[in-house]
Length: 390
Image (cartoon, rainbow, N blue to C red; front, side):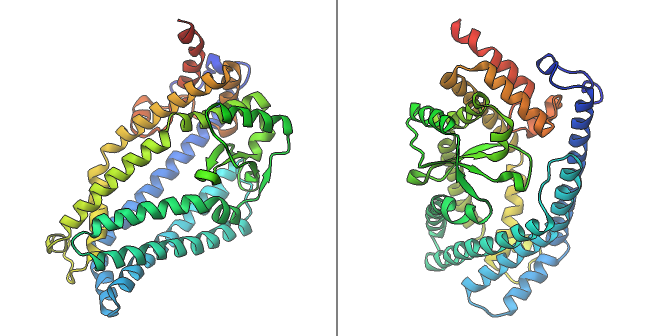
């Protein structure tokens, strides 16, 4: 950014100035430093827990309670999730009320933050308890094939949560109201019907009570599918720009990106569960990490750590395919609307409103970016018309 970030790119001429670039750079630098610190802290805590004897102590303490297998497993992982939530509090507060405040994004009050935290804690406890009790029941019930039954249950469970989330979970945090602009609603309905989407509702969400960032998304499955527009999006963009943003999300649905990623995820989940079953047979993992009381719960923690290391090289590959999906969704957006000017204008506004880094390092993009850099996307979009005509 120091080498290239002081010049306004042609795509943004007349729309931003050097003051914006300096502000965007400052935001990117602070976010990056914060992410480095929080990542290092998480890694240190994990290493100390695994290799400093704390996992062995915690595992032995749970075993000493002489609870049933199912209750022991539930308590083991629930308390760890609480510890993770508590340790994350200072980082969440600093990011929200320091960094996001400084750059004009945060609109959340401390009272709302506490309310969100407590609601999330109750919901996560409820959902995690249902998942843990069921999974450990299946493990106890079928000791040789639990990996298959657990995979089937988790898949059905995730579908259930996706189905009820728009009606049960999401309204606990935000207020959803119908989009009042009838002409915009009619355009959205016509656009969705082009690709066979029959959304049950077209709603706006009061996202501005937490942040000034903008977005639009689909939620739910089947008859619960709904189109959600941030109120910030409705406020900051005109109809043409809103339609291009929404058509991009529709493009993901049209290209079945979510379905493809879900299929891949479920395949790898099944493989991972099978190998977990194989690797938890015997005392190899317990001996490797000096666990005095051999329990399946401690082995799962060790496996999660090892799988995280093994799958780390796959993350750039996954990001590569997600970036390709984003390009395909941009192309689908153009095919649906034919509005290159609206797409470019929407991306420029999104970049300005979110203080997007216009000059990310190519290697960082390759390793970490799930979306193509904004300038690359705009240039690709401008080439759609000539590509189609050619």
